[in-house]
Image 1 (spheres, rainbow, N blue to C red):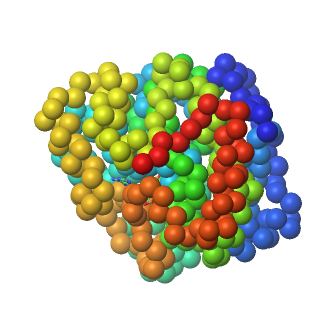
Image 2: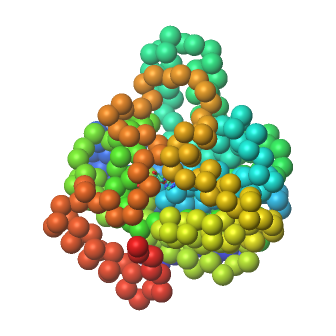
Length: 346
Ligand code: A3P
């Protein structure tokens, strides 16, 4: 489907929001037990989102921007969290003390986090946690629509979003700096599969093969994948837009830290570079960076899954059978045909 968006598009919210068919809704709700109401399709690209998007859509689209806002935009599981910490530290003069004491989700909020959390699931989680006040406070914050939260943040604000460009403010690129991170779709699918099993807000119950079909058929939240990446690729030369690959970050992190520093207008000396590279190594990152408030909440995650920060590797596609991988590679080739988009390999 061709892109319906251009950076100069102005005016009121220009997209239609329609529920998916009742049959599909029931099927998706059966496989993703965290979503209790259902899903909508947005605009001509058909972005698949939880139905709560409808109440929050205008808030995201008309979010008042500040020129010093810094955004990270990605399709889920493309290295967002890793880049958030990197960008926040570069943009805050390597203030490791604050980075350690304030969780990343507070320093660098996830704009549309609220729409992913079904209130019914939260009610259940709260009951499971004996209605503890600190749990209620965290859950309430997570449900708060991003546009409301954004107003309260001190500058410079940092936003994480998985929303595609057409659903974000049309003046975004002309006002703020935006970093987009793309990742090979096969690795994204494997990572997203585990993530959707790990978190109760998604609660995926099926196997990988079924999950891959959802991915390929644009039936996962934030799909279609290709439109997401291609629309970002199309604006990669905008001076306020930086397009990066997760694969490049893995291959040469120091080089990418320098690229981000230059993009943000920050000097990074050798000592800062080496300390940050070390801080961001996956095991250090896992052990030393607080992602969420330090409040114990049961019922939000599935124990047998590995967690938010998993392996951080390329092509760990053990979930793909040989046939499925062949099919996925063909699909990838078809979607890359006629474009100059490519994914770095090892
Ligand atoms: P895997 O599941 O393949 O391991 P996001 O933050 O967008 O959800 O992306 C998550 C992916 O980034 C996960 O991939 C996660 O393990 C990986 N990741 C997180 N921190 C990382 C780090 N410090 N270095 C490399 N990869 C990291």
